[in-house]
Amino acid sequence: MDASSTPSASSSSSKLVLYSYWQSSCSWRVRFALNLKGVPYEYKSVDLAKGEQFSPEFEKLNPLHFVPVLVDGDVVVSDSYAILLYLEEKYPQRALLPADLQKRALNLQAASVVSSSIQPLHMLSVLKYIEEKIGPEERLLWAQSNIEKGFLALEKLLKDFDSKYATGEDVYMADVFLAPQIAVVTTRFNVDMSKFPTLSRIYESYKSLPEFRASSPERQADAVH
Image 1 (cartoon, rainbow, N blue to C red):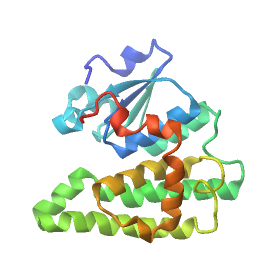
Image 2 (cartoon, one colour; image 1 turned 90 degrees about the vertical axis):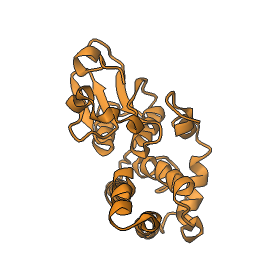
Image 3 (tube, rainbow, N blue to C red; image 1 turned 180 degrees about the vertical axis):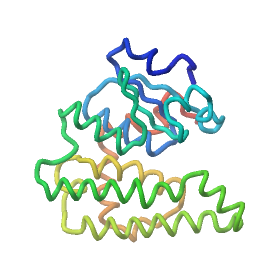
Image 4 (cartoon, helix red, strand yellow; image 1 turned 120 degrees about the horizontal axis):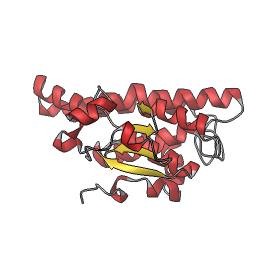
């Protein structure tokens, strides 16, 4: 990580700075949203594998030591949910929240299921803790159990939408959270997606979006192939 990349160092630039890690699904959400909105940004890698999130420079940005962090001049926002709401307010073009209040609430709820009830439970630090306390065989079972519980809830939440994306024919906040989450689940945790026909169907739509493909981990500058 560039040690000079502090809020004061970037305040003279109008371009947003995103502190990200290529494999972080939370960072992926923000990259996807920025691409959808057509907002240019500078990518600053924080190598979680090397522990750069614990550096004094990064701790000033986020004392929790998590990515992503968005720096907009003197404004520093951490947590992907907060970042996306900030972007929605500042860059209303290509809205990620529909005008219809019921659909808006549904999008926020789906995003919350991913960000609160699924992703935190299969973070690397959590899985390491499970492995140390219970055993290596429980690591994958723990992740799969919590992912499937969340996905079953999302299936029920979105069951009335027979559409290209989660809540209609346009990409909204639910999709921004779901797309990276499904991608991570299918590549890292060997979850049987045939149990989740709705999520499987809309994921096929995500894969064709250029904004989603451009935000994918393997296309980031810090990707390790």
